[in-house]
Figure 1 (spheres, one colour):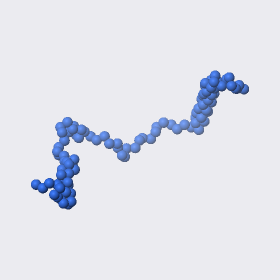
Figure 2 (cartoon, helix red, strand yellow):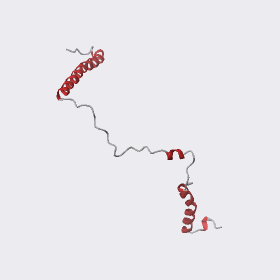
Figure 3 (spheres, helix red, strand yellow):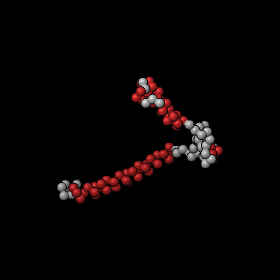
Figure 4 (cartoon, rainbow, N blue to C red):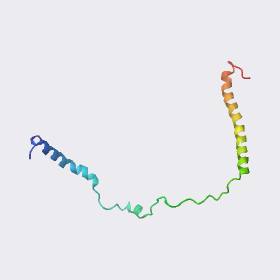
Length: 105
């Protein structure tokens, strides 16, 4: 057998290809059958989302204009009650630090 130093460039390339081919193609081989522990999952039905299954119409009644206005007023009242509480909380946190330097009127 010849040593790699005695080969031409084309011969070296062919030798490298011949040696690397089993490594490259080794990942493509399969046994053709699945192990017995995996057969159970293939027999089960697939859990794909149904493509044509659309949700049913919402059966809840739509709010009337009066109900919407009442809800808007209630939400605004809750917001107005929360804003002063938040302002007082931030003022209480900053008051001890700034009370010696300035006076709030």
